[in-house]
Image 1 (cartoon, rainbow, N blue to C red):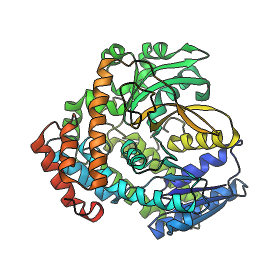
Image 2 (spheres, one colour; image 1 turned 60 degrees about the horizontal axis):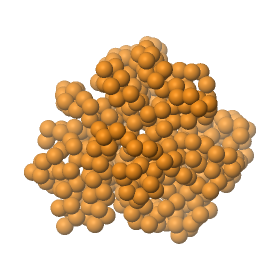
Image 3 (cartoon, rainbow, N blue to C red; image 1 turned 180 degrees about the vertical axis):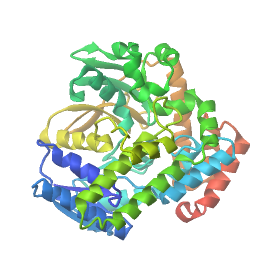
Image 4 (cartoon, rainbow, N blue to C red; image 1 turned 120 degrees about the vertical axis):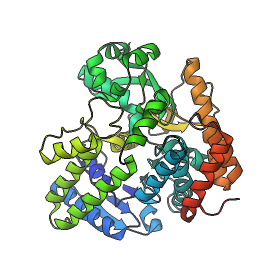
Length: 460
């Protein structure tokens, strides 16, 4: 079996292969292929992944290439995790939005549209090559904004695609930790869209344990729900995806980001640049353990300030730097992130066992207020035959109305990007709850197209 990572020059490659090799029951992987356009980073990550394999005494062969056809040929599973335009593109997305008085965030609102505008054409090209050289392969899309990219893939005729987002399973993981049981024993009832979802039950042996969890405010505070006030989540009575903060606290989020000395993109770029300087300084290819320790430390530092302005227990950027230097920065909660979701799916497909997990897939009647072809975030059963969205009964009106509004934006956004149609793009952003203005939408579209012409091309 061959697994290919598109974007293999990222340090996430080492985390993915480490998680894979820790699983004693994971099917044998003959080749783990890394594809990237950055030859230096690809070479370093290839060497580190090879060192991880050797230390685990596994037969997996690690390969690297900049040739997409070679990387995708004979692949059984492909994971996309790329950032078209790199960190500089993300920074432009954030700054253009903020300069126009709207939220600058990489996947939600205008910033998400700009990222999709760059990501979708590139992922579509990889999908075309994959269908030609390995038509039976599954593609797992983790490239953001995952829901929009997955929607574009299905709209373009690619059906062996599953959208992945690690935040989709936060409720299941949080309740599992609270109860002290494996997350695989729990069954969550998740519905919504990518970065706009709710979990209304998490059951253990048929008993919903989510109400018990929500009543324990100390446990909630330690989870991703810690950014929401008890008055809000008690009223809604569900586990809230953390990105709902940008809707339920839009004024606070915008003020906090505008007041920060750096956008998240600028912070991440600084951290990434520093890490790669460190990796070069230690000669990472010949000193793998030192390099892996640096990656682990950088990951801990990055995760510590994720949405720090919304999380009461999170350190500020400056405090996180001081804590890291002093060895006081706490380890993040144990977990495998997006890799864990992918590995669970592959295990189910290869071993014929059934798992239940939150995915971004075509609705197919699961959520009544959505079209069958809409990509939704929903609990799915996964086995050797593929995935099946679990039907959701009627959902509360507030959630339905917000979903309808954002999905209308997503449909128009995909239409605009696939057709390179400027006016449809304006209507898409005008439909988004964070914009709701024709004149503002037109300004944003014009500025994004001017900033990203290299990747988006010339639109009509």
